[in-house]
Length: 326
Image (cartoon, rainbow, N blue to C red; front, side, top):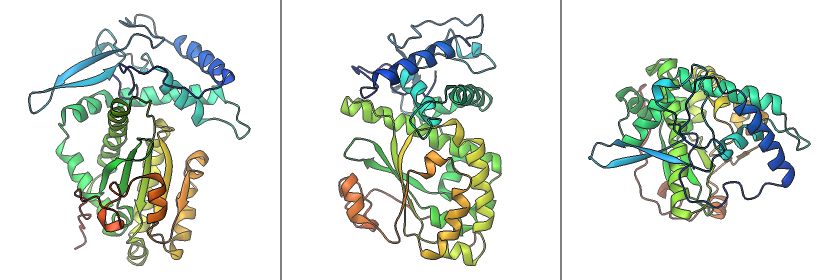
């Protein structure tokens, strides 16, 4: 069972329809290299090439059967310490793309190292249990608490059926909430956040019949000036850096665009600090607006997806950040 194989089991003609012949050739070679790493003794019950895809079910709280995408091993208990498992083409291509050079060529060695590290990370952090808990909606209390301290929502999908995430990042910066959980608890919460993206992308793929493999992310920086004045921001930045270095490198190429808005000019120094520890490919996806760019939002999504407070018509619950300093 592996959440990163989020499109497996779906009736999609081609999960990577826009690849060139050269890109498909590199992908095929990358697959051969990855599959040559398979530890001895692993019993695979399905076709590793990605043609035969299965699902497993778990019982959710309401008694319904929640289907989890999987490339099935003989059992989860037999997952090798390396974390090696069958992977679909979309997953392999994400890791290839993460280390693509500026001239468009692939750094296969770097991508292979990243992928091997990511699978070992998922094994060590028991990410299969996270995937199962998300599907069954059995989220640990400490994760729910962290989600209340750092608020984000899935607001819907954009015109390309990609999940849309809004986050109150400025409020988190100014709240002092980073002190209300340990670094390990914040990392666990962030793992739930990232693996939820795969579940949402799968939902979008089912609804559209199209291979959805990315989200779009919008961060509201309202409150960041307060974080600078009360100096809470300088506590948050080390936490963000640790999360990026520990977690995000293992979840490459799942965000298409990152939009920061309500960003005051005095926060330019803050962005320089944050940009310094982001992957260059991630930093290149960022666009920044000083206010609420409703017109820009509506180029990407319907007004019905944009939260009401930003000028849209989406009335779904988008709670304020619980502020532990108040």
